[in-house]
Image (cartoon, rainbow, N blue to C red; front, side, top):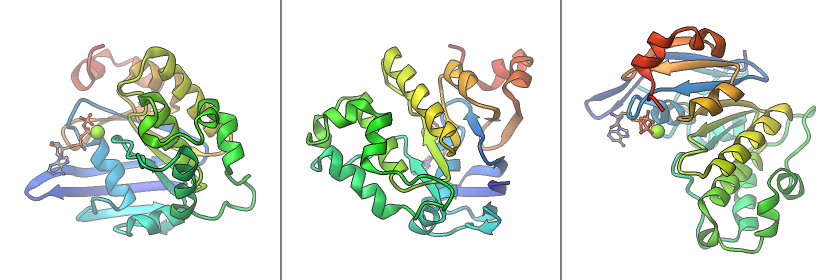
Length: 238
Ligand SMILES: Nc1ncnc2c1ncn2[C@@H]1O[C@H](COP(=O)(O)OP(=O)(O)OP(=O)(O)O)[C@@H](O)[C@H]1O
Ligand SMILES: [Mg+2]
């Protein structure tokens, strides 16, 4: 097992945002985290990354504990985050933004090809055209691509991606989807938070559905599709 979180309890003050959340990702998998607004999807990713440390539970990555490790240590261990807010550096160029990802990340494992600017540009053509532009000059879609590219520059084995298609036009949603698939085929495992059920269905091997702070359902995408009752209760109807 590449990644395993067990019984995570995370609080914001008195708010018990994650209540015994357990989930895992195997090497090579794309696993989707689904659920309505405010259920704790982003908090789950932030808890893993050490940005919002859980109060109790366990998190193992490649057999080692990263529970309550500082975010840069989690990154060095091989976990990358593409945050929901994207957070690119507006005054830095695309290239400079990408290079920031190198510092934050880790050495590539021996059997995996390292991520370089050239390799990122191969997957994200629009970024190469914009390499000398400032972050602030990018469209929403380009910012999303930049954010994914920057995370990849840190050579993650597991990429946590929070709502990559949010606010994007259909053509760009498809581009994001295709890039995630390519990244996965290149050996990166993915834990994906995704509102767009169609995108999730077309990408993920398995999914977890969150109710308010708890895992309400887990299974393969086919098992989810066979449960319209679960989907109606825990997902947005779109
Ligand atoms: N910084 C914070 N301080 C206090 N409460 C927070 C904070 N961040 C999130 N919460 C609360 O924790 C709960 C889970 O929030 P979270 O952002 O993880 O949800 P989400 O599933 O990612 O939602 P969305 O689909 O809107 O992104 C919500 O009730 C939210 O209001
Ligand atoms: Mg969120």
